[in-house]
Image (cartoon, rainbow, N blue to C red; front, side, top):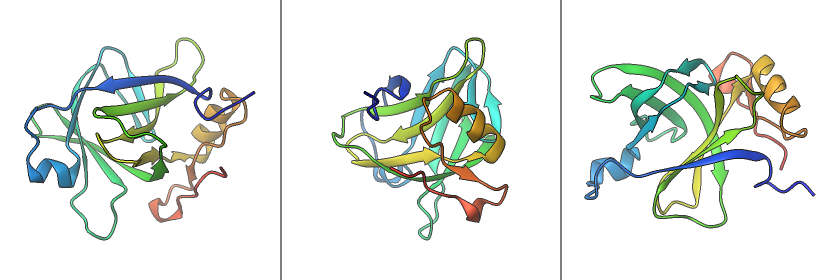
Length: 156
């Protein structure tokens, strides 16, 4: 029986950078993530290290995610996402990953901010989405056709 949870290969719980989250951090959903292995994003591979993840400050689109270096002085990449709902919010940031073959960087699936019942699911270019799908029992990976406006939500 394949449930949504069975298709997630790994869920990493990451503690927010600061115990006292200010209003700016709530708006942009600032989260610090430290990874000791490479992580596949839709448009690049992040090397091991510490990164700051935020939503772009855009009232019109709350599904554009930015990855900064740990000092927030350098924007590493910007990624398109689609809304993703979860049944039970948690008090910590949660990052979910797609299953990948051994030796490949883990592929980021979704990011959920503490207390939110919705999060960001990452859309991949068609070729990458097809590869990821083949490793996840046919689970549909959101795709975009090289144009961010063409994000297609997966069938649920």
